[in-house]
Amino acid sequence: MSRTSVSDASRWVEAHLNVGRVQRTRSNGGSSWAAMHVLETEGGKKLFLKTSRNDAEGLEMFQGEAIGLNAMHHTQTMVVPKVYHVGVAEGGVESYILMDFLEFGGRASQQEFGRKLAQMHLAEPMADEAKRGSFGFPVKNTIGGTAQPNSWNDNWVEFFRTQRLQHQLRLAGDAELSKLGDKLCNKLEDYFEGIEVKPSTLHGDLWSGNIASCDGEPSVFDPACYYGHHEAEFGMSWCAGFTSGFWNGYRELISKVSGLATLPSPTFERRLSCHVLHGLLTCLETGTV
Image (spheres, rainbow, N blue to C red):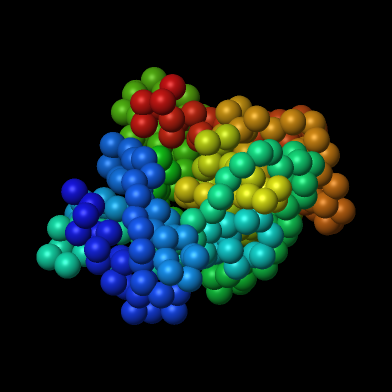
């Protein structure tokens, strides 16, 4: 598997990127559903290639990942790999996504990471629907290996209730858990009363495995992007390794915006618990907790 995609992607690079021929390719690890490669060109550019079998799920995952990376790249905040192409290899056997290869190393300042994430959340969204105040994303995507619906909704609480909590509760298939979840979902409005909720560009799966440093600058990858309330970004905070420096950097910018202060308070802690519940349910579905 994947040699067809490597050859097809190499031809695409040579035809479209003006970086010369692809001189070398090498494996760069893989997972249960994808293989990773690095392509090196005559012009010195390195590209990252992820390949998978060309079924509807694999191609849809790559398309969702590409749109998500482009949405974050649009904010011009953190280092995010630029996507060049999503394609199906000749013969229709494999699909692939082609993007910049980033050299990760060292650790970025947690305080700077917090500032950059706040800047991403405060940046104008790329999608017109989000600019007009709707929550969602242009396509369905995945968080881990789990399908994530993203239909546009003008009401954040309704979006979060139906397309995040209730969606994951259905997937869990546990009657008692669903009963408890329904009680929470019925009073979600109370937790968001009196705060301003605007669509922010969210990474959507922000845990330590998707955070890195590139030339000393904070970098994120492997997103499950959508446009949502900025606090929803912290549903995986229990495994993200955020320090006090991170929170200081984040709140330094967010707290200056009227109505958007994500500061410790009983109501914030209740909302955070709801977002963490969503993260835990997602991990339950993928078998990682």
